[in-house]
Structures are given as C-alpha cells and as structure tokens.
Picture 1 (cartoon, rainbow, N blue to C red):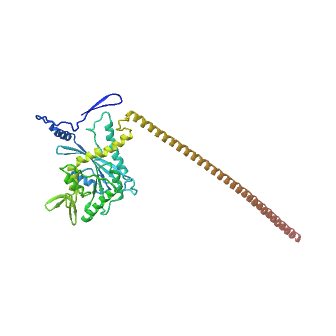
Picture 2 (cartoon, helix red, strand yellow):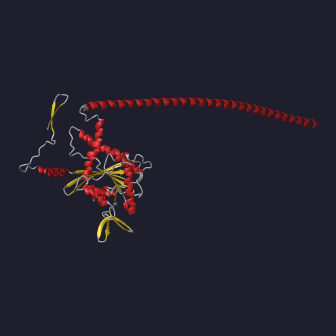
Length: 428
C-alpha cells in the first residue's frame, strides 16, 4: 500500500506501508540473509559489552565483598569509615574477559550512605549521578557527528540495593531512596548478611519487604517472562525476591572440598549452597540470564523517560501540525535564560543595596551610640574633675590652717622660752 502526503511547502512524500496486503514469497534458493544473527553476534562480541552496577547500602554491609563473589575477582577495595559528612559516589571501571567476550564493568559505590544523622537527602547524590549519565548519553545522541557504537555507555543498568537484615520491616530511608530511584534504574533489593537471622525470620522479613514496597508503589525490577526459554525460571525467581545473600572472600574446607564461605563455631555457611543463601540465584538472574534485559530496559524505559522529558523541555514535539525548529527552541531557551540571569542579577543587586543600607544604618546607630557614650564619659570626667578640684581646694585649706596653727604654736613656744630667760637673768 502506497500513501502519498503533501506538506505545507508543497512537497509530496511517498511512504510504503506493508500491511495485511503484503505478500509472502517463497525463495527459490539459498540467499544468505539467514546469517544475519551470526553477523550481529560477531559484531557485538568484537565491540564488547558495557555493564554498570550501582551498589547502594550503608558502610560495612558487604557491597565490595559481594561484587568480588559475583565476578570471581579481587576488585579494588577501599576501607571507609562511618564518619563521612555526606554521600559520595565512587566509580571503578574494570575490563574483564571470559572466553571471547569482553565486558567493561563499572562498579559504582555510594560511599557514606546512611551514615549521617540527618538522612533526609541521602538519595539526592544518587539521583544526580544517574541523571548525569543520562545527560551525557543524550548529549552524544544530539551531536551532528556522533559515535554511539564506541561511546562509553555509563548509564546505570542495575541498582543492587543492600538491605540491613533487621528481620522485621524495611527502613523508611530505604523506602524513600528506592522510591526516588525506581523511575531511573532497575532496582534489585538484596538482604545482606542474611546468615545473621534465622530461616523463619528471613521468610517473614522477605514477605514484609515486598508488602511494604507494593503498598508504597515502589517499582523494583522484575525478570522478564515473555521469553519462553526463561519464563518459567524467571517467574519462580520473581516470587523469591528479595534475594538473601551472604558474601565471603575466604576459602573454607568442608570435608574433602574447599568452598567459598564463612566459618562459625556452629558450622560453615557456604555462599554457593542454595540451602544456605540465594547467592547462586542472584548470580544466575543478574549475570547469566538477564544481563542483556537489564541493559535493554535501561535504554528503552528509564533512559527514554529521561530523554522524552528533556526534549519536551527543549520544545521539541512530535506534533506534525506545529513543528518547532531547533533554532526557535534555542532562541526561546536563550531568551528565558537571559531573563533568568537578569532576574538573578536584579535580585543580587537589590540584596547588595539592602545590605549596604543595613550596614549604613548599623554604622550610624553605632556612631550615635559612641557619641552618646562619649558625651556621658565627658560629663562624668568633668564632674570628677570638679570634685577633685574641690577636694584639692579643701585639702589645701586644711594644710594652710595646719601650717598657721603650727606657726602659732611655734611662736608661743618661743615666747615662753624667752620669758624664762629674762627671769633667770633678773635673779642673778
């Protein structure tokens, strides 16, 4: 079926739709396009794959240990304390190879998560980091000369959220963080250090977690069931969420075998024993069965949601009746940006004027207070000077009186002495 449409400029567009009237033809011999899947596989193997894992959980809960166990490698492990002032993002990239398949693995850690007294905004650095990776990919897409084939895709493909094994219910911090992340990445909740709670407590804890996630509308990643080859096992694994795992870097001898596990006085917990924990199930679902689905869901759902919102902000729309050019969008955004800058400048200028006015009033007030204080001190000084002058005058008068009295006494004594001398001479 051929459809002819005419746009505003008068140009005619011809579009062929293969609908129900398309014919099915039988080939008369071998053509060769049945090798397309092999070509695609070879191309992907040569290019390699990217896998980016975000680990969210408090310090010391076992994030690094679990990564070592999942990929059977010794990744860089920096010891962190519980004294971080805020949440920091730490990224480490490793090039792995298994057989002919190359994997560029990025492990992103949330350093200091949950260590602060005020945990209200602990999720914000995680959201900002995920958005930054989306923005980086979007900017590469919008380039005129783009190379998405060799571009390092740093978008988060899965978030392993480590839950503290309280045995009762999920914490409000975990609910708030997962709610903030569920529209931006694939969340797989994990009960860390599950060997610290009993089997019955663990089953109750799992049920409580899923119930609280559903009641708070938190969307976690579910393994796909539309593929017949994995639908049965994925359906079973979806019912076992969240996975209760145990990690260990130590090899322990159990009987004649050496296994990876944790040794206690009462026995050994084997991390690859499905009777002890869900580590094997997590590895099967995360790496061996659904790794490509995680990458695909990240691109088609989470990134597409971010991309759609950004393009709408830029004024780009799919409405053919009202097309918006990039130039018009640029001019509009530039005008809005300049207007916002002008507003910020006016606000800053007004704040500066207000501060200068307040400072001037404060200086005048201080000057007035100093003048009043000076006048008060001057009056006190004059009064003190007057008092001292009066005291000095009084003291001088007293000294003069004492001096006069002394002179009178001395004169009287002298007259008495002279009188005695005359009497003695007369007797002789």
